[in-house]
Length: 60
Image 1 (cartoon, rainbow, N blue to C red):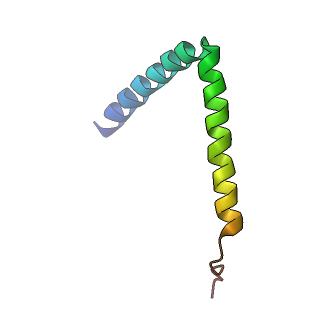
Image 2: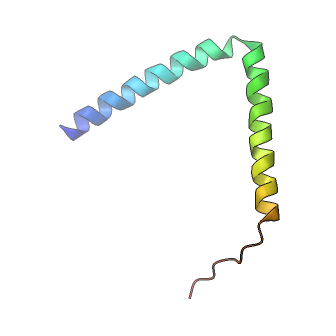
């Protein structure tokens, strides 16, 4: 039963993702927004990591 539910849910997610990707892929403005948004997120993450002053965890 669990496998059946898992396969069904994964198929629904797969179909929805394909439909949404096709819908958004046809809109150049969305692609531009997505590119700048992801660039901003990744730049913020890089700055956060670079500015992190916590000590590294060393396995015992």
